[in-house]
Length: 479
Ligand code: ADP
Ligand code: ZN
Ligand code: MG
Image (tube, rainbow, N blue to C red; front, side, top):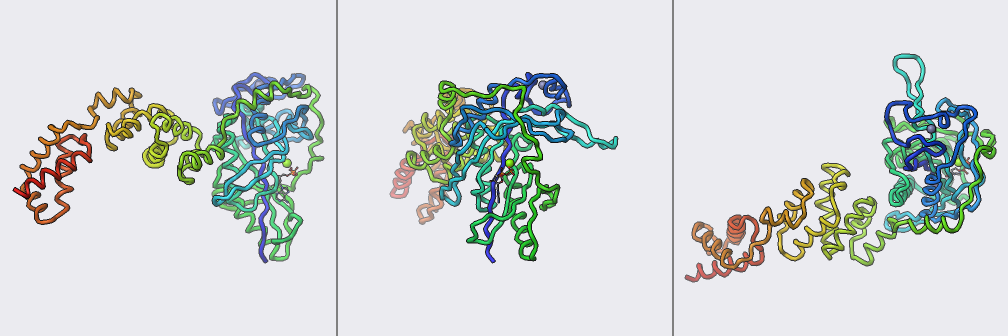
C-alpha cells in the first residue's frame, strides 16, 4: 500500500520587543534566574496586565508578511491549565478571535512553488523554565521567560512530506527574520515548532488520525521527526493497529519519539475572555503604517535576483535565505555595478569566511565598502588576489577601502617601462626556461609569467604582462 503523509505545523516565535507582553520587565534571554520578573509576570493575585503595543504590532507585521487578514476587532482569552512553569495557572492567549487569520506562504520545493495555508496567527505569553535540580529531589523554576511575547503560527495541513515541513519551517523563519519581529535563535528556544502528522492511503479523501510532536528546535529535527513519525504510523497501520491521537516527545539524540499524553481538547482548557484586558481594535491608519514597514520578502527578492540580475537560482536562494547576506549583496552590487561579480564573491569568499568564523563575520562586513573593493577589481585597478587582501584588511581594521589599497600599494602596475624592465630581467636570469620555451615546452611560459608577476610584487596587469612577455620572448627566440 502506498501512503501519503499529511503535516501541519504550529510554530511558536518569541517577539523581540524590549519589554514583556503585559508588564515592563526586560525581555532578554538568559541572566540570573528570577531576576527579570515582577508581580505581574509572576501571576500574583490582584495585579493588572497591560498589553504591550509593540508585541501587537509585531504580530500584525508577521501576519501581513504571511498574507493574512488582520482582525480589526479581537481580544485576549484565558487558557486554563495547571503546570508549574505557569504561575497564574492560566496562559493569556487568543481563542476564537486571533489577530491574524486566513493567510498563506509560498515555499519552493525542488524548484517548484507550492502554497501553504496559514490558518491563524495569535498572540500569547511564554511560560517560565523548569530545571531539574541535581542536588535536591525537585525541580527549580526560572520565571525570567514568563510573559515573554509569543506568536503562534498555525499552518493548514497542506504539507505532504518531511522535506516540505523543513522547507516551510525555514521559509517562515526567514520571513520572521526579514520582518525583524523575532531573532529566531532556535538554540535559545525563541523559535520552535510542533509537528502534527497523519498518514492516509494515497487517494483517500479523509485525513488519518494525527499525532503531535512538540517543541522541535532545529530545521533538521523537524525533518527527522516527521520522517520517523510517518514510518512509525505506517508500521502501526500495516500491523492492523490504529494510530491514537496523542502528544509525543521527539528525542533528537535517540532519533525516536515517545508517547507523552493523550491530546487535550479545547474544552479541557476552559477558555474564556480575559476580563482584565480591553478588546483590541486596529484602525486603518495604524494598519497602513505597519504595512508600509514590511520589507521585500525573501522569495520575491530571490525571483528579482534571478529574473532581473541574472543570478543563478541556487545562488539567489542561498543569498536571500540570510537577510544580512542579502542586504550586503544588495549594497555591494549597487556600488560595483556588477551583480554577478558580487554574487560570485559572496558564494565563494564570503561563504568560506562564514563557514570558518560563523555568521558574526557579517556584522563587520559593510556592503557598500565591500562594493567599493569590488569596484576597484571591476575597473581592473587591482587584481583578484589584491581584492582578497584588501577585504581581509577591511574586516580587520574597518579602514576605508581606498586608503587600504593606497597604503598597501595594491594598485595594478601598468607603467609599460617598469613592466618591460621586469620582463627583460626575468628573461636574462632564466636561460634554461628560455631554452625550454624554444623547444616548445609551453609550461616554461607559465613559469616566466609567474616570475614576472612576482618581480612586480603581484601587481602586474596579467593581460599586459602576458603581451609584453610574449613580444620579448619572440624577439629573444628570433635573435
Ligand atoms: P487543535 O485545535 O486540536 O490543536 P487544529 O485544528 O488547531 O487542532 O490543528 C492543529 C495543527 O494540526 C494544524 O497545524 C493543522 O494543520 C494540523 N492538523 C490538523 N489535522 C491534521 C491531520 N489529520 N493530519 C496532520 N495534521 C493535521
Ligand atoms: Zn514582569
Ligand atoms: Mg492548536
